[in-house]
Image 1 (cartoon, rainbow, N blue to C red):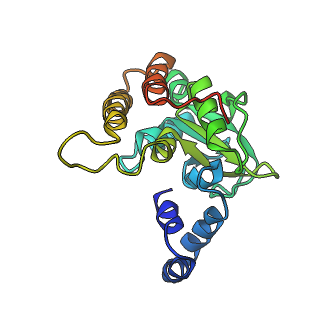
Image 2 (cartoon, rainbow, N blue to C red):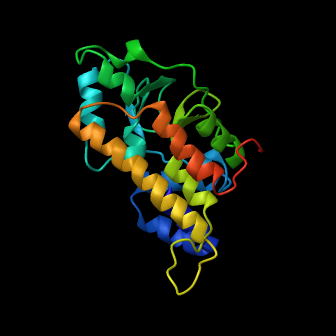
Image 3 (cartoon, helix red, strand yellow):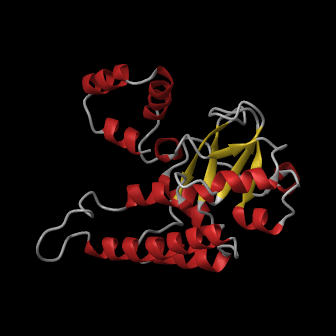
Length: 231
């Protein structure tokens, strides 16, 4: 979460000052995120993934993920939970991938097509474990739950990239940047992946398959030298 990353870099007094100026609900979410290590699942996750109840129809789920304000990474996965549907939710039940939504009749309930095989992470899971799960199962996002099985949020590939790229990768200056290799990988692999996913979703013509995700993970995780097998 970008706001959490910003606050982590400020002195505690400044953090408190900014939190007091926020809406109570927003401040409460950020206070919770600040309790986690920056490079843990809890510290990296977004608290606003796409969340629906099991009774929601496939048509409803597709309508939600088509919203322009939802990033391609978040639109790829619907997290299914018991009420309430704001984090922390009721009991986490499973996920539904957009590929499956596009293959099923629109009147069906998403609770009938849950993927329960992906083991959710705890908020203390380290960066290495998160990247390994994403790469091993060709995922764009992974759920994060508490000890009571309530969904706290989700870590996406975008969140991971924010933490494995060097701080200066966005800087533009003459000559070769220290993070130049990271920039090329990010701009090439992530742009191609997200354009493919967004285009297929808008056109309703197909899905982003495992092959597309594998290319993305290989280019981003492997080419920049991240060992996803090490926690």
